[in-house]
Length: 151
Image 1 (tube, rainbow, N blue to C red):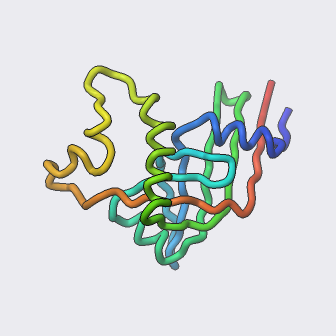
Image 2 (image 1 turned 180 degrees about the vertical axis):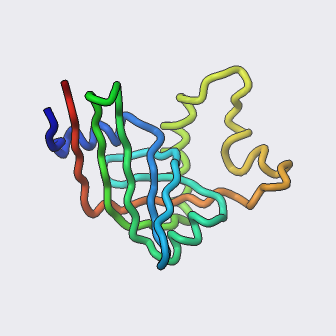
Image 3 (image 1 turned 90 degrees about the vertical axis):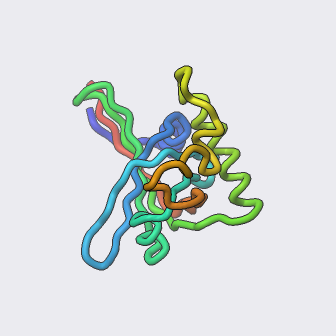
């Protein structure tokens, strides 16, 4: 059986996961990458360092965001969000970082994981690939849809 998810089911998927895919586009082709995120019921929050994704999002703020749950090929749910990328600064960026840390850090298990190594650029400054302090952003949701299949 296949069907459409209710808004509450879509929100449940968005709230229960921490990794989604953000799709953006330039004039010639789409670009999609996985991101860690937090959903507060109104916005999707994430962070990124400077690079292709941020360049594309700044030039065209229209995004598509997708999250799925899958037990097998016959039992899955998928939520899709259409919205606008908004770069955050100041207090709104701090609040977004706190929300994202609260959602993602508890999922990071292992004796070698330490908060100071993963946030505020910590640990990255030693890497030759380090591209600066993370940029906080949110997706202003315009539309949500979802589908499922169950056996």
